[in-house]
Image 1 (cartoon, rainbow, N blue to C red):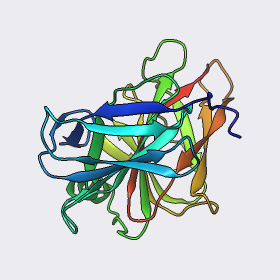
Image 2 (cartoon, rainbow, N blue to C red):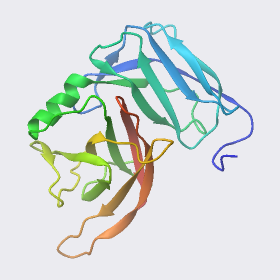
Image 3 (cartoon, rainbow, N blue to C red):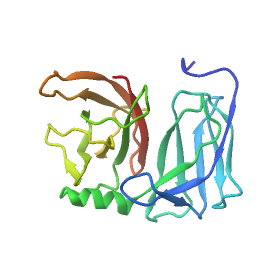
Image 4 (cartoon, helix red, strand yellow):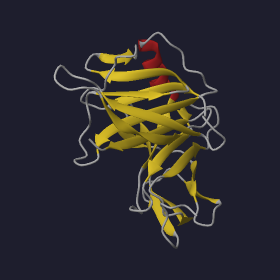
Length: 226
């Protein structure tokens, strides 16, 4: 039994969006077909179809009530610019969620700014770090993921490759590139530290499990208690 799950089943519905730039915030409606999949209450995945029409939302029945349900969107168009994308959804709390697809061109642009290349056979991870208390983005964090080839931090001047001292800016946004799954269920641990300042020492801020899938993108908001 999952200790974070509630009894019974739930329904999840919404639209599918296409993220349009490297803020991973701006989006337009994805007007092509896709398959949406989530962990089901029965232990087996449940799936639904997105038809690309705003008035016809995807509807997933029998969804497991979880603190984090990794819901995936797989475009029907194979080999296109948009990649299969996994999104952390609190199905224990919500029943309506607009899901997002991430563009390979946007990711490649980020890699290019740090003179690196994206591996199409590896997983890519986009994480926003927020205060668990206020929901505000968290600056001043140093974050590691052991099996990521690259940690790329959003900065006021674009993107920066982590040299071991990088910290999040006011957006609280990091891209982990070319990540390999850490274990059989694809989970990868993210370790968060509040970086030292002139007046305060570094402080451990927790570890969080993130799903990683080869050839796909994971996008999630991580709530940090500080």
